[in-house]
Length: 235
Image (cartoon, rainbow, N blue to C red):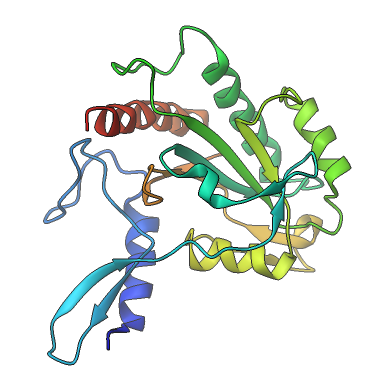
């Protein structure tokens, strides 16, 4: 029976936070054909024979709904590239810039021809996923209004704002996406969370982390989306 090494979980997290936005590949790392690192979520499993293996975590199935009250299942994202973040609609701080930048990425992805260059026609599907960490206040009506104010058409399924049980969303952020998220009475708006955008490949693996409050980082994200489109489109 294989068992996870707790040390590997923490080192994996530290590696992701330290290297996710770097343009250069760390020494000794074996990147995929796109040149982008594979950051996780993964665990190093050790067997009775002392051998170890890298195992990617299965996505935890939790009950979620989008801004229109439609039930959401992560299986619907298989085979697609995703840009993921965590936010809450009443956030008075970093969420403001994050949502403006996500909206800009979304708007540019709608344009034809796409502002995101790709040699693949048609390109691999691209989705934007935002999880609210404050689902009690962020009702479906609040999220629908928030989406509309950021340019999301009701008929669009490309940018989804998701809500579920608060504790499950926080656990999802920390244990699967390797980001911080949680309630904090001393924080503006009552919550603390990471300001990063995650780039997820069609296999559900983290391939990059980017400062969602800085448009310069979002431009690097756009470039990396194109690299993933070519990596998976050429298979």
